[in-house]
Image 1 (tube, rainbow, N blue to C red):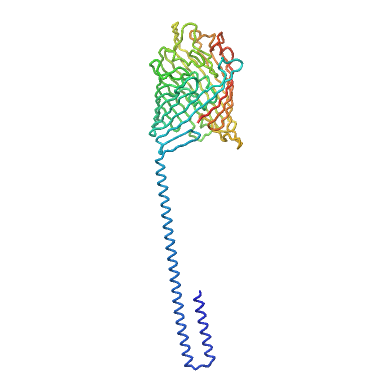
Image 2: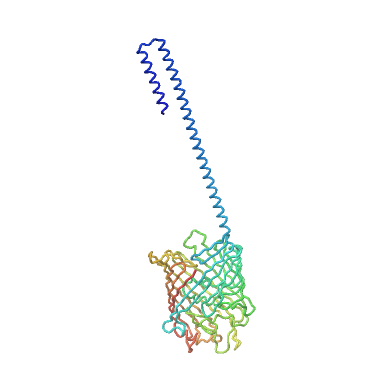
Length: 504
């Protein structure tokens, strides 16, 4: 810009000079010489201007080249830094793939290898109950607090496909091993389980202890086996639309846990089919509607261990919601043993939709028995059924596998967890042929009818509080005697339950 101004000033100066010369009247010769000199000066000035412009352009180009070089250098450095960051991230990801993972949360403590082929989990169940029997319907010592279950749960996976579970129980009067098994998962529909676990017969029995609606299971569970040692092929087909389980077990009496031995060298077959026919459909109201049938069959060779458990009494028999024995194999003459075929059949089903839950089950237990004193034999067919339901007042979805509160208990935030009301009715009927040859009708009831109602408070996924009332009436029994079953059947049983449960 300055060069252009200089050039214009020079031209203007030259014009003024020419004019001045013309005005002075200088001779033509001298004027021509002066004009030529001025032209020469103009040419020299033009050359200088061009030289200056060339120099300026060269300097600008040099500056541009330097700037471009610096930009390219900076861009290269940025690219190098970006690549180094990518390499660091790749190295960190590669390192993470080789590092074990530790997780602590509502599901317990879990440690796993980086590829999840090896997993170890520590969980636990703690249930502290209170039973209060009303109107003198409980035997002495039945009222009060008890540690119903205290179970650490060790489970995990080895080499991706091999699972294991080990569950001891420190509740009650002695330490027991409740579950101890290994499971091979070839596919979800083809799995093999070996060890001690629940026999696949009773629906309510198969529901986890932490998810049952009431403190104690219904009268139907009196007629199905509990845990046994066996081998079971099982699986879920099409995501659980159809589930199956078939197995061979040592065989146990009704409501019994195995003593870890086969008492008579005979085995028992057990199987179950259960279907959720609408699970994968768009019919939301029917997706959690399930129906199934289960059963077992085995031969028992003259042993009392094949009869029902002795819970609530001293002889084999059946118990109430309050865990008092209302029926026992207690004939006036002789003792009773299981002898011959023992089969069970249990149609079952449930329905869950939104906050609504319904569960129904029927059970038949056909037991061959022998009176060792008289030699009398018979097949006794005892039956039971139940229907239970619930409604979650706070709107959460109910399920067979528990409830997760939408707003876990936190008074500071005005959150109180989930509340559920539940109700149940159940009956158990003893075969008429049991009396009087195999059971004393003066002390043992021939039937029990129980109704229950309760409120369950889920503070969060891990802590739950229960309160319920159960009333059981009896048909028959009620004779003289200070112990069960006579004492139990003398009047209806009325019991109030509470529970504090911690499970993770």
